Length: 383
Image 1 (cartoon, helix red, strand yellow):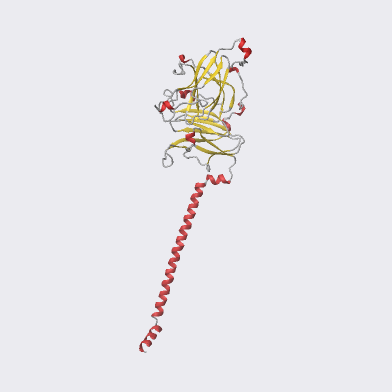
Image 2: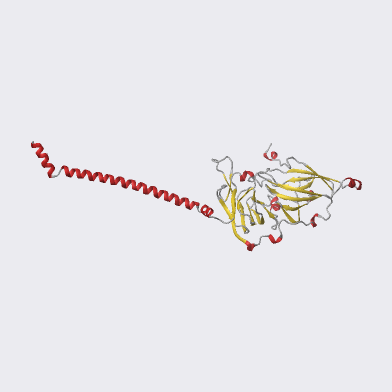
């Protein structure tokens, strides 16, 4: 077997489970991408058509509607044909079918986007099957209550998680920071690539980023690798203002769907494209304390792609933390100075003792060879 044939996606812990609905009923999916290190697509085909490209007229794909992302509801549905999800992302989806039959949810078109262009991984596959039965007749309706939408899905309205007035405005941005995702390979540590944020592995004792409550900040997310990184921020959500990738959209057509974003949507996870970037605006709420930002792929965050974000006023501890390198340098300098002074004092003391000893010997010689001493020796010799 090959790598492409053993990477099977499970849905609710099963291989290709079956969902059932009826013509005209609304099927509500709470979709979570829980992959450890991969992304997937969500496309609905009539059974037997999933081998066709979603833009092929013969595919007759079934459109669906997004009504929320990452736990935040929209004010109105957004019609989609394809969505691309990565680890940690959640989507609220509505489907409705006007014909009975069998349909499939397909994973398609992301081969080579992950794992440095490795083709055939993950391979195109069916994620789940949807069986749509005929609408109930009048007799059956008496036996079973069937719920039908009172208005078409495109005309539905919802209470949004954020109002339009809460959207981040350009004049409210306090500052802009760059967050760069990169990779290294120090096999003296572990036999697996290590991942970094701004060149550093995660350390709980170091706060790489700082923000104040109620302020708005811009972060430019840079992905230097040919694999995706789902950026996830705890506590606060953000709006995506720009996305791009250096990869070819002709070679990877699913990029067109990935880069089709709505800048008014609030999220807490965004997939930064391979060899790409994303620009987000964060509106920090009135929460204070230490939290984290990280890549939501488990293998990446567990090998270092995580950083601490402190929200609140910096106290003297953080002032020390910011200047710890300078303070360590000063401390080492003081220690070296003390060592030099100690060695110098020891050397000077030794020299003084030698000089003192030499002086005492000179005094003895003076006594030995003085005129009185010679006369005494002469008297003793005559006796």
